[in-house]
Every structure is written in C-alpha cells, then in structure tokens.
Image 1 (tube, helix red, strand yellow):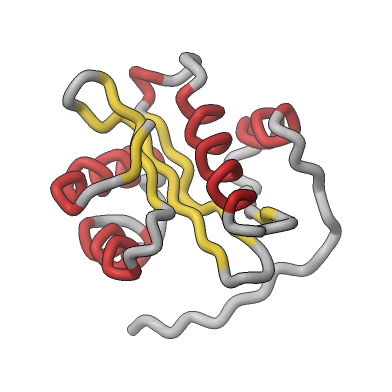
Image 2 (cartoon, one colour):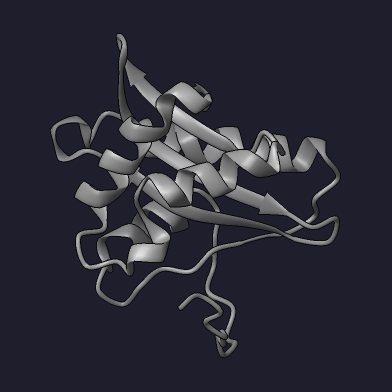
Amino acid sequence: MRPAFASDTDAIAAVWVECFPDDAAYNVGTEAVERKLAIADGLLWVAMDGADVVGALAAGYDGWRGWLYHLGVVESHRGRGLARSLVEAAVGELKARGCVKVNLQVRESRPELIGLYEALGFAEYRARSMGRLLAD
C-alpha cells in the first residue's frame, strides 16, 4: 500500500472501471482520479503488485467524519487481503487526523462487500442516504 501519485491516474481509473462497470461516468475514469488528487489531501491509496496498481481506495475527511469511497481490487488479485489493507491504511490515517467515525456506503448490488466491512468492524447504521447530483 502507498499513497497515490499523479502518475497512477490511468491505472487507478482502470481499476475503478473494472470494479465498477455500471458506475456513473463522473465516479470513475481519469477525471475522477484527477479531481481527488487535486485536493491534495493524501487520502487516496493504491495497492501494488510490483509496478502495477491492482487496487485503490479513496477517503475523505471534513474534520467531523471520514468517508471511504470506491474500494476496488482487480479480480485477479482478490482474496489476498489487499482490500483489507487498503481499508486499514485509510482508517489508520483518518484516525491519526482526529476522525472519530468513518462512514461508507455499500451498493445493494455488491452484497459480497458487506462481510468484508463487518469483519473490519463496520456495522449498519439505519439512515436514509440522500444525494444531489451537480454534474451535467
């Protein structure tokens, strides 16, 4: 695991396209990675196999709560603990910054991830998730 660099942009985008094939265009692709890196908050990590990016995870922190976004590991590298390591890296960094609670959302189309997150100490909080799309 290591923080992502601008030179990882295309590789991260490729991971996310593979892992989220039905995702909206504003969530994946080089533009999404570039937007995250432009914030320069150090909250984007990659999992490496040699020189190859094989996983990625973005996080956010607003001084109140942390969020995990777009955990993805390419299929050929699943089952090796990379997703767990990415989450643990993010949670550790968020905690070091003073974060007291980390949130995430799991799409209903990805129930296989619920067990992973539960094993990492996450629990379901009953709340309604709402959003407002600002992109065209």
